[in-house]
Image 1 (cartoon, rainbow, N blue to C red):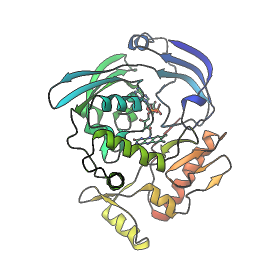
Image 2: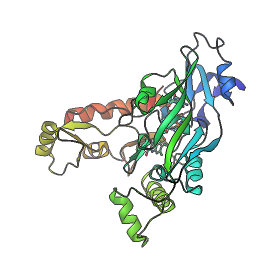
Image 3: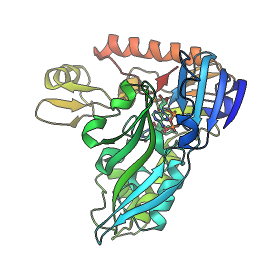
Length: 335
Ligand SMILES: Cc1cc2nc3c(=O)[nH]c(=O)nc-3n(C[C@H](O)[C@H](O)[C@H](O)COP(=O)(O)OP(=O)(O)OC[C@H]3O[C@@H](n4cnc5c(N)ncnc54)[C@H](O)[C@@H]3O)c2cc1C
């Protein structure tokens, strides 16, 4: 266990916001975490993974616990499926690489999402037609309220679009995650047009999971700003879900509104389209702004304050509500 006082979190959040934590504790084993019982009573606590879905708006007046729990192993195998267990502190991209090297399919569409394995269930990470819940089996959870350990299955996790029980109850800490993955290249998901276009360009007719991972990574590199170069936390807002009446109303004013049918009643509208149509794409306010090619991403060009980025997000919400009568929901965790 490593403990530090007044510790800078600048290198621990992908927005690169320079704030301090009153105390910072790095935990290297489950036993160390359980050993904190009593020590942190009445203390304000934040569990941190890769910091790629967090916006710090001020110094953190409490203890930040960084879960550096490592280890990946294949637990059960039959001819069709393998169960892979990874500890919370494993980097998600390293985990994907492990899966690809062991020919385990199901997570390749989630390639290049920053962050750690333990945070992946928190917002049920998703990209290119796949969500974590599609391959999720269970996770080991430590309840910081009563210091109990429990296994959560798919049902317990209450997964929804960018949501889960863990986003609602911050005392539930994920220690490890088990996924059920395919032992082969069957059922590859190429439902997203971009993936098909990229495969065609590369003359790949029968893609492997490695091909999909490579293609997804190259699309993402092209479309999203790299947090190592420009501070950001990916999509700042969720894509809003609206009913048919609301969609019809928007269509009356904006004929080209893109939408994705979820069921008979509901449709998803890209938040990026709303922000771009509102004329906000690429707006820069000194050290921060809205990315020039991906309007869903708010950026820190260097030295910005988290509070200013947060205020910008509130202004965007207000403008979108005024124009489209839609309440944008924030995806990033505001601290
Ligand atoms: C460039 C970029 C692209 C992105 N693209 C995507 C994308 O395509 N799809 C997508 O879904 N997300 C995307 N994200 C968001 C982010 O990468 C994911 O949400 C990721 O899972 C966050 O992991 P993290 O370890 O960085 O979490 P953190 O930011 O450290 O934490 C996120 C939240 O989870 C909590 N938490 C952390 N660890 C645990 C734990 N072990 N148990 C319980 N709670 C915990 C934290 O307290 C916090 O509330 C993107 C981010 C960036 C910067």
